[in-house]
Structure formats: C-alpha cells, structure tokens
Length: 274
Image (cartoon, rainbow, N blue to C red):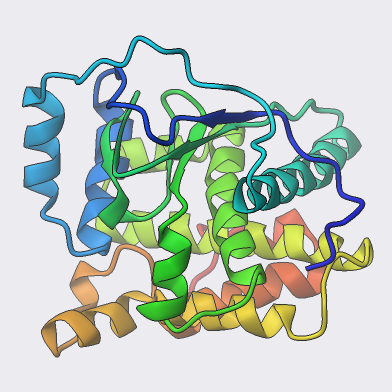
C-alpha cells in the first residue's frame, strides 16, 4: 500500500503490555465474542465463562491514546485514518455524520465492553463500546497460518472490522440481536466484507493501492472462509455451522464493494442468494 501521505488516526488506544483492563457486560456484544471465538476454533462457552468469572488483573495505568510510534502501529493507524476519511465522505453525502471507532491494540488478552477477547480469536469489533480490538500478532498468523502475505491483507481485516462499526451506526446489529443465528451472522459478515471492498475502492481512487494489493485482499478473504477453516481444522465442512460465509462468498462480496464503491450494493439481507 502507498500510505505515505495518509494522515494517521489519533483514535488509537495502545494497551499492549498492559494487564487485562476493566470491561462490561454481555448482551449483543457477548454474542459477537462467542461467534468470533467459534470461528477461530476457540470454545465459545469457555470464553463466555471466562468473561463472567475472571477477576480482572487491573492495570492502573491509563492506556496511551494517539498514534503509536512503532512501524506496525503507525501502519494500522494510517489504515484507520483512511477508513475515517472514506466513511466520513460517504456519510456526509447522505447528510449524516460519521463517528469513527477507536482501535485498541492489545497483547494476549483484553477486556472489552463485550467481554474478554483473546489473541487466538483474531480481531473483533465490540458494538457496546464502538471499539475494534486487534492483537498485532494476528498479522503474523495471516502470513503463516492463512498464507495471506502483504500489507493489504491486514488492512483488509481492519476495514472489515470498521465495516461492523458502520453496521452498528446504521442499526444493522439489531438484526443479529433479534435472531443471533448462524444465517444472520453470515449475512452480517459478508456485508462487512463488502463494506471493506467499498473502502478499498476509494483507497484505489486515492492511489493508495499497489499492483497486487487486491490479490492480497482476495487471498486473505479466501483463506478465512468457513469452509476452508473447517476443512483445515476438522477435515470436513459443515455448512449449517457457518458464521462468516464460504471463501467464495467472502471473495465475491468484497469484490462487489471494491468494483462499485456503492454501499447500496452491499445489502446482503436483501440478496436471495449469497
């Protein structure tokens, strides 16, 4: 990616190296945590039990806010800044104001308003506090475990989680709260992939993408499809248990948003076929 001139977002909270901070209750956030845990092979009941029972290892230091100084921290803050610019313009065109999320960097485990997050679960968005949580070690997993190298793959992951934030702002999370079943979760996730593609479309317009960046995103989307992960982890695919969509579906919806740059093309809930 070409982010040299991109401003760095100050909406970053750096909790790396700190203890597990205080967090809040469950509700729809707990459902999100459970779905993310199950997706990455972590027993969701264990996570929820830990959320309810863990005694926080309180760190009295206040987490630094603003742009991190390390290379990877600065990179993700620039990606976040790019999403803020894109979604700010999109919301403004429809007469609305975009309220950006806070990106929380952590290491190992973190307490959120949705409960306890763990690095093994990968990045997640908590609608209860409007924050996205990322352990940067996940990007090593993208390269080693998921065979998705390059700098656009982690940018796509951040843009996907920001897509969940957009869903929260426009009220789509109410659908998950009303049903909290796997088919609804799949449509939520595929829409977030499409929203990530919308961001990618405008990043390309701003000449922030290098040749091959789109292929990197498509590789990442394909690598973390439910069917691919299930085949790798248990040797078989169980479609009824999907929570994020197949590799082909994730690629298709990302490309749809990338090609058009139109939010209205991302209505997975109106689509008869995914």
